[in-house]
Amino acid sequence: MQTIRLVLVGLGNLGRRLCEVLEDKEALLQQRYGLAVRLVGAADSRGSAYTPDGLDLRQVAQLKREGGSIADYPQVGRHGWAATALVAEAEADVLLEASPVNLEQGAEPALTCIRTAMNRGMHVITPNKGPLVVAHRELHALARSHGVQFRYDGTVAGGLPAINMGCRDMRAATIRRLEAVPNLTTGLMMDLLAEGLSWEEAIAQARAIGTLEGDGAWDLEGWDAVAKLVILANAVLNFPARMEDVIRTSIVGMDPAQLQAARLRGERYRLLALAEQDPDHPEMYRLSVTPTALSADHPLGTLGSKQMGVVFHTDIYGTITAIIDEPEPIPSAATMLRDLLDIYVSSDR
Image (tube, rainbow, N blue to C red; front, side, top):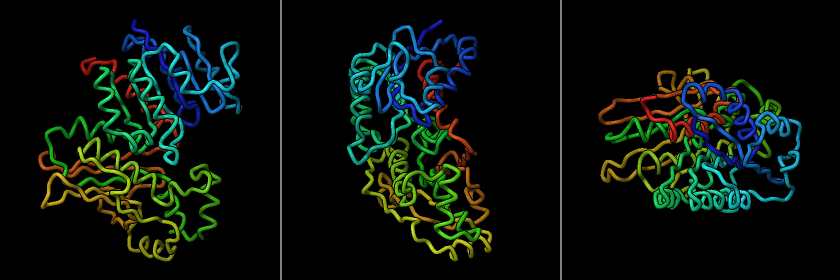
């Protein structure tokens, strides 16, 4: 039995649910793969907890469900113990970095946590888009220099393995065109508007069901989709894209009548993230994120409000489409377990 010591930074929707997934899969991981997963440290915005003996996954999840902090964990929790300090001190094998995206402050503290973990010889797994957008190539180089693995399949399209498919299954292919609908919030909003709701009514309903958080600008103005397209471009297309390279069109202020007319034609609007190879410069791609009316015969034209998808148009593997139905955040959280197994389990097991 191999014991893997984990430190988890971020105990929001994804981090808390990962604890529940790990508890639920504990016996399977041991029986099928010979792996014993031990959460030795965890941090949220109010503090941290650490013990080499391991935290109780059920107790950690319950603390967060009840609105508490990991700093309240009996005996080993400490208020004010920052995540960066925990990562610098904890003895662990893997950092799971699941804190909120914070591009306004340079993807901190996630970026410092990841750099610190790699410098200390830890593998890193993250669904956090921020560090990849800010320092994609630097982090890959840092991981290589320290002989550790860097995994981030959960940064794009929730639980859909878009990064893994692109990097593993498209090897040797030229991807001429990549299309993705990687954001749920914009699809739901445009569907509600197409059904006849006003902007105010659609926003209220999206907030009521928990899809839209805060003012929603990160999603509705297209920034979330832009960040995901930048990650896909760097990871899958080997194109060193930045957010400023992407032509972005917000869905804010779209005329509901335009969306309703498309619905009557049998079309459905989605915020489409698109990378198109430049025919004159094959190493270059044109990147855009734009509300697009998709017909029913488009591979992504029938996506529901809780579905995301990606299409790879390749030279030797044909056109490959993958779609995920994700009515709740568990698949997004479980990407961290998928990445963990990718590091520790060989393909023949």
